[in-house]
Image 1: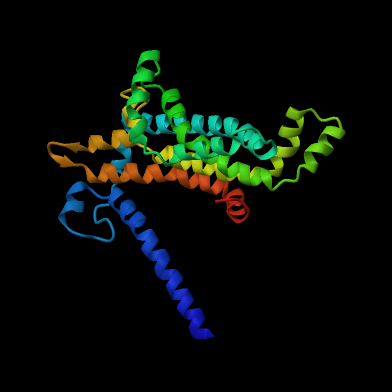
Image 2: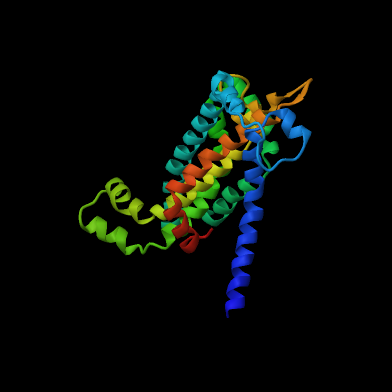
Amino acid sequence: MKQNTKGKAFGITAYIVILMLPIYWLLNMSFKTTEETLGKMTFFPENFTFANYATIFSDPSWFMGYINSMTYVGMNMVITLVVALPAAYAFSRYKFVGDKHLFFWLLSNRMAPPAVFLLPFFQLYSSIGLFDTHVAVALAHCLFNVPLAVWILEGFISGVPKEYDEMAYIDGYSFPKFFLKIFIPMIRSGIGVAAFFAFMFSWVELLLARTLTSVDAQPIGAIMTRTVSASGIDWGVLAAAGCLTILPGVLVVWFVRNHVATGFALGRV
């Protein structure tokens, strides 16, 4: 029994070490100079420096890249949840002609690669003046995030008995009041899961975000390519930017961790 316990502990420890090694190596590189990174392999910085982070925070273009990314990702999360909640409720509570086909069509949009919609989005936003705006990227990402959020939330809503709806109507609740004060708190775990995936897919998506922006709304992923120059790649600045890119995701997971854990156990994810 003790050998099995030790074997499991060793396996878990080895898994965690392997999982965290790339992140540690990225953090390690962020405190090195490019010369030291390219010179030899060291597990700890020999010449510890904050110059790479200072470059990012002192350069407005670097700093604004993070602001732009967080702006359109936040807008996308809000739009996705506002649209997906009533849509998921309708799919769960009502039956109408073609409902299953429409539900499958929504989900099939998530299966299509972003490159398919690249040219239509570019021409549309250029013609209506939305090119290089946060709204353009937020709306473009809704094409993929809304269907996924509807699919996730529909599973949670279907798990709530319809008797709650009927009891609320008998007690004199209007539908908006019932939906906001009673129903949404009941499916908050599902909302947490949907918000988590909306953030994750919007934060890491680069093709649409880079194509639909140029200067004012350019995301951090596109700005990170500036480290490539005639003299080579500035590995230290690139590593520092990568570390800072991970932080928003860590914060989102921390704030919704309880809802996500419950959602993974009860929902369709």
